[in-house]
Image 1 (cartoon, rainbow, N blue to C red):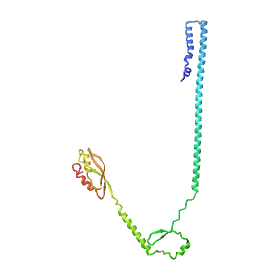
Image 2 (tube, rainbow, N blue to C red):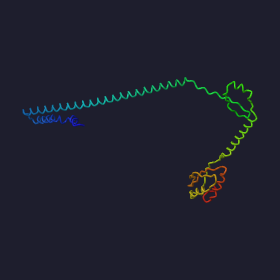
Image 3 (cartoon, rainbow, N blue to C red):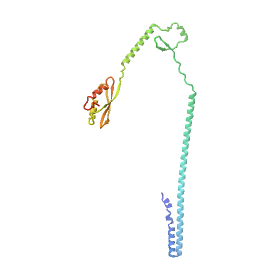
Image 4 (cartoon, one colour):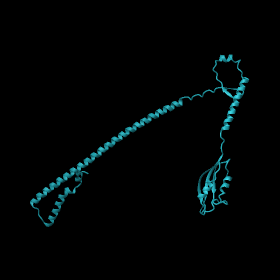
Length: 267
């Protein structure tokens, strides 16, 4: 805030001579004092000074209000201009969307009116005596076909039958060899084992080491965890993946129960 604004808001200092004069007159009347002509002239001067100060105060207040109104008017004009620009940009976006929509409608209408492509005609095939089929291609003129009609053998010769039989046997032999080389599928199973200790004082870490020490071809141990059973006793729950042809549950149970110091066999 500037010094001019502070001075415009402070009214007490401009009106102070009036308050002082009123207070002096009050006490003079109370004491029966009569004013001298000099005092009357001095009071007139003081009143003129007070009026001048009031006029200055009013002019300063009017200047401040006019300044504030001018600032508000400038801010209003700037906001109106920004709104006009935003309105113009929105109109442009709407026009672009309308143009794109009309183009899309035209393309859809053209696609709906265009006929669907006709499927290609199937090529005729001629069956042979051995059961296989081949595609028939006619490229010779009609007159040539009529000339060679007497030379065409419908059922084929014996040499063609032997050649087709030989090719069929070779393909069957190759297929059998390829199938023999293909590895056979191995059946596997995922098993979840529960191993119970003797009591709550059994070393569960050592118990898990004993269980994992069981190794066999086609056996793969997985994750494990301790599951509470009751009375502070926890059982070992361990997962494994086995090949069905090599490892069975009976073999796993037989190997694990050998660790009698840790595994509760009677459970």
